[in-house]
Length: 571
Image (cartoon, rainbow, N blue to C red; front, side, top):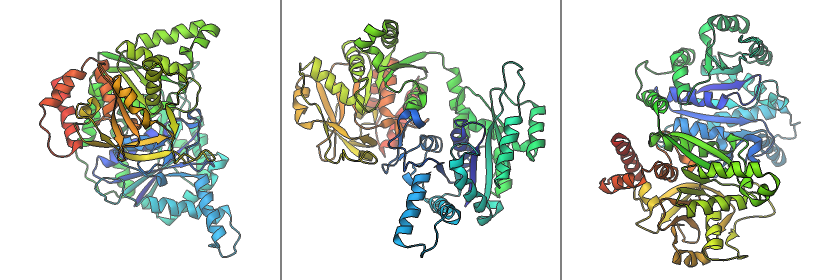
């Protein structure tokens, strides 16, 4: 097993997740099996109870793990399926050690950070690194480990110490450290400054880790003199200083690393069993990056939510939209709208903000209402849903968005007021918030052969998608809605939970209880989002015609990919 530790310096949010994913991608393109682990030094057991404004979105895995959004990057880049144990937090480590102490596993010894916490970290990493994350079940050969936060943070010290010991346990030829640092370029001088990187590397070396590669985040490519200066003061060869400047698309980051010899260096440093030959996987990434840069037609989607001040709150949603926009050959414009700004109270208090929000909504080609929690902003979301329904604008509601679409229909079409439409699920525990929702991969059965979403999935009988909710639409009211044209076309296996809604006589009005964005991939966009973009670009009917003309055989995954490729070629 080869271990690649990715650390960061100077500031948090520097791009360690994208760089770790990109390193894994170029190694996977060489034929290696790659896994990834994200370490978060906070004391929370998992990310499930975070506000999206804390660390961005909460990403959900197949096994129901609520984890850091970087695991979403790993899954999208590497096309793998991780588990909740691939996200390690201080809280989980301390919890496991305290449980051992309570059981008497330490035989009366004093339990300390060193060696007990540091040993637990190393054991966790070594055990999890060998768990298969690919569909073929093969044990990984390389494990990319991202240590969250910045070097020098007090909460990450036990992890730094654990990896200082770990490098000797697994031997030098099986461990390397990539340090991501910032090279700022102040507008006043225009000069690239190396001092923050020098100080960051000095701090890291003082803690016992020496970086093998220094990846410098900067706005423009590193000048040769700057690279040589970093090399001299940070005790590495110039070839070990890698420039990761701002690029037009994240698809270009793996190509950027490949062009600077990262694969050949890691091959030599870790004695990796790979051949240096042209790789099909990277060719696909280059084709995606080039196609993304050539797009001329635009499509705009109004994202109506309550966490719109931080784009990381909707990372997977944005990625799913980007994947779909690329598949329909359109450049995506996302218009973020705080749902509270659409409400009449905003008109009274801040009329300019109110009219700006409605102008954004009315000028969009499609409307998306993503998942969320709490009452704030729900009236604004229902106003946006009402507008999309009446104006025949493409609409997709996800989780809460689907529930509010049902509520809006009940209020404005059925004329119901004060009736409970959305109810608690039996498994919801109101006394404990963490891990008590309906989580992870669940099966949805399509009940209608004419469903638009069923056709978008490849005319399959069922789909397996990830869930994260504690409320559901009351199934006893189903027949009232279906009489008036709101069809419940998807249900769970028992037929007790409403999973998919579609509105009759509308260009595209779909709601899903699950979160399809979590399984969207660059080459295989999520069908509900793909349908939204097709409808917004005016291409949905031509795609559905392509579905009818395609003769299906084999797995649904193959069918969907075949249809998608045929449609892109036709365009």
